[in-house]
Length: 238
Image 1 (cartoon, rainbow, N blue to C red):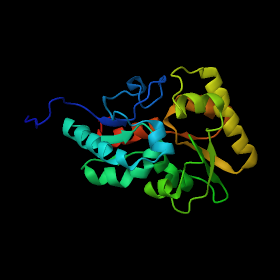
Image 2 (tube, helix red, strand yellow; image 1 turned 180 degrees about the horizontal axis):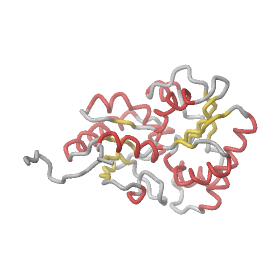
Image 3 (cartoon, rainbow, N blue to C red; image 1 turned 30 degrees about the horizontal axis):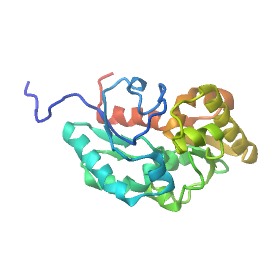
Image 4 (tube, one colour; image 1 turned 90 degrees about the vertical axis):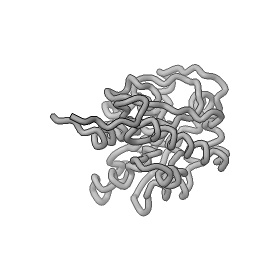
């Protein structure tokens, strides 16, 4: 059997363009390789902070993100994702820059999830900062007229201090869970027709099993999407 060469490291399935942050990434997080049963390669874009991407929408980050995607492609990964859902803003530009599948945000699932639901149901979307989410982000991942309701984590004290502002790198995971559940509970009380939840923020994926058990709804996040894409680009005989 002839095997095709051309890569320094073989067998890589998924590449992740990573922002620079130092708070914990528990299992279930895209930046914790133990979350997956396939090889993952990370490329950290130095200086690409959450604040620069979400709050400032710094256009100077786009080229380093493209460079990272192209570097991951050269290393041999079969698909590329990112470590923050607000990379939806750059989905089209990064996808155009490489020749492998790219899904930069969990939000790319919203059109699919919407079509899984009844016509009188809506998709609940939980984001890091709802004030910063724009039509540009939604359009970047193909969200058009899908019925959605959006809830943000920006007013939760620990989330804002650690995740959004980077004032400390330590997380009280019990408090984190409490803050997230508070946000979702409020969203569901205001919108009882939510039929499923999409977690935009990659830092929330760890809690998906807990959220499903508590609220009884399908929970879509970036890690589950990554597993699905990996299965399509790295087919295995059952």
